[in-house]
Length: 276
Image: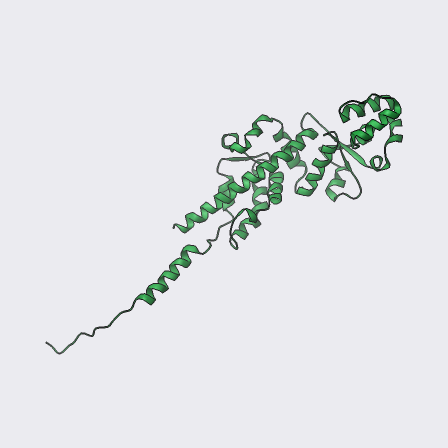
């Protein structure tokens, strides 16, 4: 022996391993930051197109940029993307699934060849239209069986501006527009007073009143309907009131599907980051 001795030290690694384990768990389970560019990968996957071309993709990304930013501060689920906001993002951007990748739940879109034309006209002529304003247009078209809408002084700036300048609608001053805003019962009351045989539909009954009475029928129309400015679609070869009503139904369906698709896509991207 050379006089040297070995010192035996007892090691307790439990505390060290616990520290390492905690650090690893934090790394594994803490939320991973997602870049806004994730929407680019979603949009340019080949599954989507836009009635506005590439500009539509830019609009969609801008509309949902804030949502993706919030992903980094919260869990990413359906509650994070409001359906009304998704509806507006679609309405403004004109985004839609190409037929090859159309989800089964949207297969009914193949039966209507006109909805994309109506989509294009709304997206081009009403940039940044709100969900609320679009619903007003749709509901008033429904009330008038797709024939016309009305605008009054209490409406939003966008709706009132339509009565001044719109590429889709034009202002009309005619008896039929006022009659079409009334109920079928009210219109039939006019028929009874004038000895006119009423029809089963509101529009045909209104046509009979106009044919018999002309502008004199205004005397029967309540003031609330006469004071409204009526608008009809300029070119029904391109889009009709019914097309816009259908567009509302379609976009509400598409909004739900795109929202779930985007959520699944982003979550899969986050999962891929975890696995690295």
